[in-house]
Figure 1 (cartoon, helix red, strand yellow):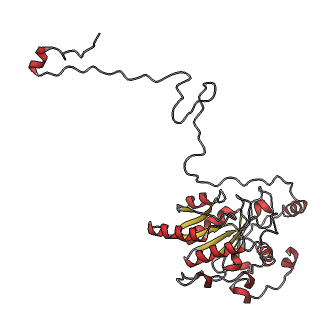
Figure 2 (cartoon, rainbow, N blue to C red):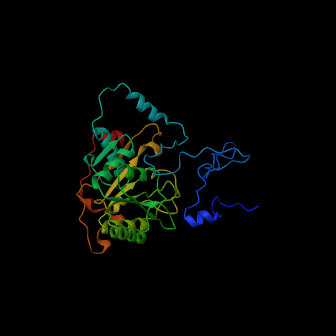
Figure 3 (cartoon, rainbow, N blue to C red):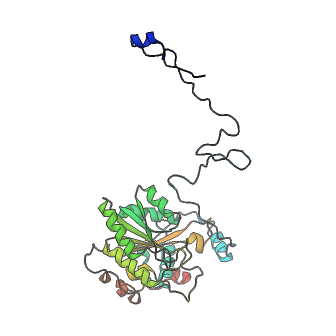
Length: 322
């Protein structure tokens, strides 16, 4: 049987020009039962039971993840030092006390990076130091891909744009120099202001150490474009393949344009003891240069331009920590 709309076949209705009344449509009722959860955000499980929508893993990450544990017991010497300082009631001055900064100065002197205690600052973790450096320099942040999980949230926390640059095929932690120049050109063409480059010679996500020639190429490209370099050297003292490459810090190549950051919570101290130290350039950052990039950085053998700095005289506190 053919169903027609009431009034559609009525000659009187057609002659008078009146429209046929509309039949109201019935809205479908919401489904109930095991098939109700089969939506876009809740795919079904095996057996027909719906799966709850995921609350994590989507959207912007605003905060850095917790520091991973090393899985090793705490060294007895560190426990003794912490227990001996448990009865201290005096607060530590901002940026670290003189004993702490002198010990950190001796740590970097033994690794070929010349500095003085007034060039260092300590904080309870690498997050506050990195956030302070990014806030001081301003602008957008460039970092290699892949990178540590805590870098991108730090930039987003300050409202800065983060751009990821591909790394060479040989290693991670250091961006490819040509890809870095292309990314800087593209960001500036879009109206951005790239100002800081984050890199990690001893890379944690890939477990590789960047060769010195690749580190030099990336540093030359960054300094030539007026970028300030932040070198995260948290894992430089961990075990790696020493016969494959030699670890050279960017602070040795471009000491006036590099801030070296080292987080003790991970490679040296347990993750439950937040402590980090940063080495800042002694001289003010150099202006942007348009000449060849080879004239902006010193060779690693020269240990940077401030080789004329006098080595600090050993004090009782310095000799104790050395």
